[in-house]
Structure formats: structure tokens, C-alpha cells
Length: 265
Image 1 (cartoon, rainbow, N blue to C red):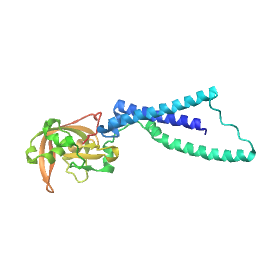
Image 2: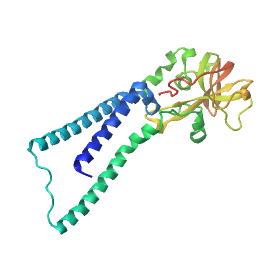
Image 3: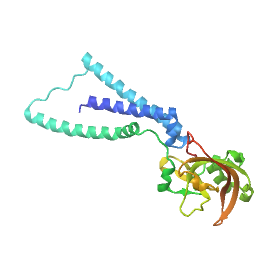
Image 4: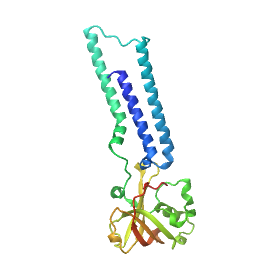
């Protein structure tokens, strides 16, 4: 592979990665991969890739123009059979390394184009498990959940509220409206299920499933992994020296998956 062609493919792959990242930021699906506070960094990275690709293409254009005007001479032919054989072997090894490098660089772009963006769903809980306490990293905004109206709190907000409240027992009896997917764990009573959501601290690799126990007489009728909206009353229970938030449901309805199914600590 000639150096000119190698540089051209480098520029095309770099530009492709930049445009792919821009598209993910534009349509919001970048949030299927990372926490929302890193979106600006991804945008800057995408612009940097496009700038780098533009520089590569400009150098190629300048090189071509120099060849046309005679400012730069094309590589001269080698003389002598021995020198030709040595050069051929060298070029072959060099070209193989270049092709291998391009394949590795292009791999993220190829995977991104082959597989459409898709968030984690309830089926991933089987491998990752689910927690009923806020065992995720906190941000500065994490301690402000007590100022959020009870009906607007998410699964994560209620878990934080139980930790942040100076008297968690005071949360008992508050109204709750929570949306999430249905999870059933082995050994759960027939009238209970977990309403869960995935959280992302940095990226999807550190995602964690969190859930709240829901008491509902018709729990067995709910479809596993389906999305529901639960309306009810908070019930605070002490287990193992910790306060646990439960919801005594008054109404459970099927709900569509939110456009952004993750919660961000």
C-alpha cells in the first residue's frame, strides 16, 4: 500500500468517526453510551477528528499539486534485480503493517455502523443483578433530591432520599409516581416485584440496575421486563439496619420505554 493511499484511508476513517460521533450527539443516542455530563467532551472530540481529517486531506491535496507542478518528484524506479527484490519485500511488510493498523482504527466505526444504538433493557439484569440501595457514585446534585416533589422523584431519587433524609421514617406515606421495568427475583412474594432502572455514572460499562420493591396484589399478572408506571404510597421498612423504600401500589399501568431510559447520578 502506497503512503498516499494509506494517508487517504486514514483521513476517511477519521472523518467517518467524527461524523458518527456528531450524529450520535445530534440524535441523542450518545446518551445510550455515556453519562450526559460527558456529551460536551464527545462533541469536542468529534470536531477534533474532523479537523484532523481535514488536515490530512489538505496535505494530500498539497502533495498532489506539488507533483503536478514538478516541485516534488515522484519516487524513482529502483535499478537492479537485487535492490528490487529487497525493496519489494520491505514494501510488502510495510504495507501489511499499514493495513493491520487501518483495520484496528476502523473497527469502532464498523461496529458503530453495523449495530444501531440500543440502550440496556431489563434482560441485562440477569447478568448484572439489581440493587435496592443507592450503591452508585454521587454527584453534587445528588443531595438535592429532598427538594424534588415526591410525585416527580425517580427510582434513584427515592433511594437517595432515604439516604439523605435525617429521619427516613418521615418519608413514609408520601405519594410516589415511578416509571421503570418489571423485575422479579427468586424468592419474592407473589404480590411483589421490583420496578427498576439502569444508572450510568461514566459510561455503559459501569452501569448498574437499581430497583424499588412494589407491593401489588396483581403482581403475577405483569409481564416480566415490561415497562410500567406505578402510583402509590411510600412505605419505609428497616432491613438489616438500613431503611428501604417500598411502594404500596394503588395503580400499575403499562408504560412506554422513555426516550432516555437511563438515570444519571
